Amino acid sequence: MVGRVAVIATALFIGASSLACAQSGQTVGKVSASDATALTDARVDLTKASLQLTADQEKYWPAIEQAIRARAKNREARLMDAVKEFGDRSRIEIIRDRNPVEFMQRRADAYAQRAADLKKLSEAWDPLYKTLTPEQKKRMAFVTLVVGRELGDAMEQRHIDAMDDDVAF
Image 1 (cartoon, helix red, strand yellow):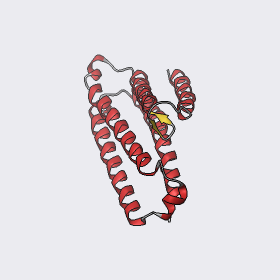
Image 2: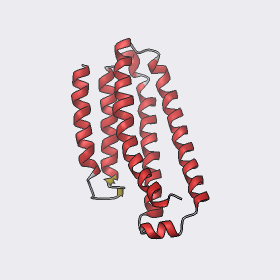
Image 3: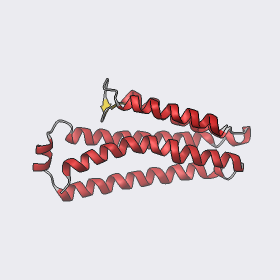
C-alpha cells in the first residue's frame, strides 16, 4: 500500500508542476482557481484513500474534509488578495511605495489566519486519529506531512517569497 501511495504522490507532484504553469482563467499566481480546486480535490481523495478508513472511522471524515477545504479556500483568498494588491504594479512601483509597517501587519494577519486554519484542521483530525491503527497512522504521517502540506504550502511559499523579494526593506 505504501508503494502505491508513493506512486500516487509522485503523479500528484508531477501534476502539480504542470498546474503551476497553467495560465488560463482566474489565476492565483500562475495557478488558476479551477486548478487550485482540482489540486485540493486530489489532496482530499489521496488522503482518504491512503487511510483505508473503516465504516466506524468514516463518520469522522466529513469534518476533516471540510477543514482541508476551508484551509485551501483561505489560502487561495490570501493569494488573490496579494495578487490584487501587487499584481498590476511593477517591482519598482512596489518598492517605491512600500510601507514596511503595513507589510509586517499584513504578514502577521496572514500568519494568524494560517495558524487558525491549522488549529481547526488539527481539531478535526483528532477524533479520527485516536481510532487509527498503527499502519493507518504511518500512512497519515506520510500523506499529511509530505504530500498534503508540501503541495499546498509550496504554492503559497513561492508566492510569499516573490512578494518578499518585491517589498523587502
